[in-house]
Length: 286
Image (tube, rainbow, N blue to C red):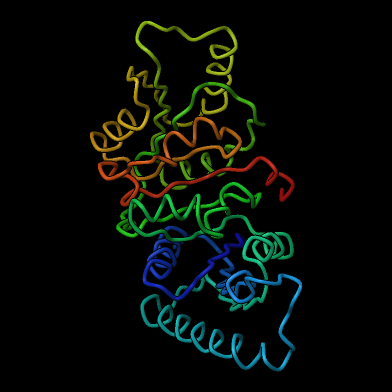
């Protein structure tokens, strides 16, 4: 049984992410937790220690949210009727966004968070500027980021960009092997280096570690040379019609080059291809 957290602000982007999650986990037994957080930070800019009294909070924040959650649940039952694998729970919380997610990840033993983003600049805001953006760096749980144009049509190939600097426990990659097995998908391990620069001894060792780890899966290595990491990834994703990009949150220096770009107009994977962000702390969920 998988426990999936679906944070929603009731936008069409968050609906798109919910739709993606329901199709992605169609044949898996899942508990889905739809969560709406009335963010303290948006309510109380001046004094973070202030909390509205119970009655006020219920009237202004919780009731409308519960009503909208019911509407989303109704929409799910209309569009995805009769899936006996799936159970749904509606949650409202009144907290700082990240704190709320951490709390629910812990309490509900969440296996994955699935959330939506909007547009290329949206992804940048999502990651740098907004509360929700901090999720992938600050909440220790595998997170699937679903951009606004992403539609689930199955998974045939996952790209895994790496610099072969394995600063994380190899078991962090378990969600990837799960998906590969479930969808009989192929894994493309992509290394982008400078021209004429070979792997050093530790990178070579880590490459062998990955070979060993994915030995039962259909995997290939791709070595690309390009000074611009994001251009290389873009070409690779487009030319191979990649369905998902997997990355490890701990590998942030590498990660930031691909995700946190100052100009992302040409980077179509930001709006089309889901990112699976993996966390090592998540291992204690067994």
